[in-house]
Image (cartoon, rainbow, N blue to C red; front, side, top):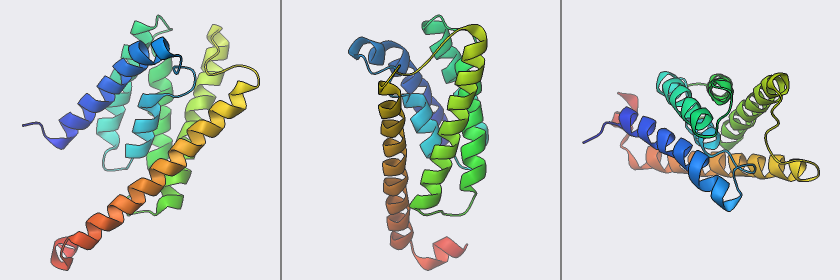
Length: 167
């Protein structure tokens, strides 16, 4: 049986494989970054070390499979994890704080990709008028994920007895 940290690492690595191999086949690789969305939704200070390892492995895997400069995607994913975990904090935040953390992490990753990608001559994401739609789609997915995560966490807290939450 896998423990939760190994399972999280495995899921994020598999999402990197899906991003590198399946999404380009159906044309969604420039619209949605599955590893980025998952790392942003799972980013907490408690999970930060595992997510940093997953971001490094997943980013290197994506860069290797897509023949990109090695480390570019890893740097973006690591920056997103650090920013999102810092904004979210260790308390049980509501959907607004979860969404704000996801959006801040997404902005950090986009900034890293824009600056570093510009230096090496790569441009990611959709181009032209579709860029705004791509940003709005990712923002909507992050807000939706934050809302669902907060509702799920509230339901878990209601189901557990009070002495489990205190001790």
